[in-house]
Image (cartoon, rainbow, N blue to C red; front, side, top):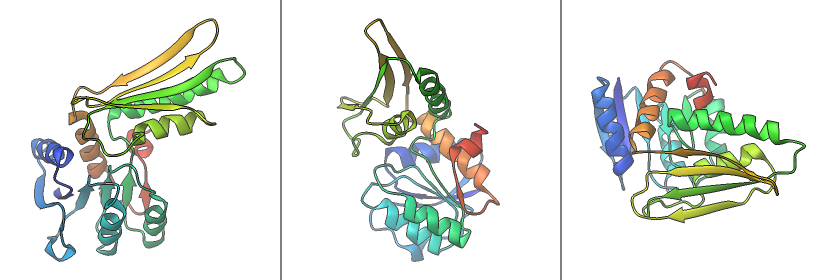
Length: 214
């Protein structure tokens, strides 16, 4: 598979490493100031840029009719989802590509269902490295949205933490909590490459739930 990378920071480099290990070819590495005219033919584009540039990046790529896998968080994806549906160009965005995190999402939804009717108050805490630009994280937003209501989210930035997310349910009697802790960026990158492989031959808007059959 011929992969173009848009955003060649820490995540982009990790995606490159994982993709090469899985036998794929990196045909383009675009960072700040990249031009559509520079893009060679590619089977898919993996986009990890910034909240300020992601929508424009995806928009230009869909115009070029290139399938896009985007993991940039902190921007409103709805317009690009609709463009993907309308044009038929494949687009898959996820707040987190980690297989473990997506299983954690499913567990969070099930726990929220079980908690209905009981006197527990939910909250979400996320801890990330100091370089992360968006706050709260996209993963934390996804967890809170699945619970529903006005769920408080605490965001902590420290050191080089890859990502720790905790959902906590408090009552007067006890506390129930579930936690996902990433050990490195590799899990996120692997999930993005798996999504790119899965997206081949697809049309329109897709999610990681479809990729992982959740």
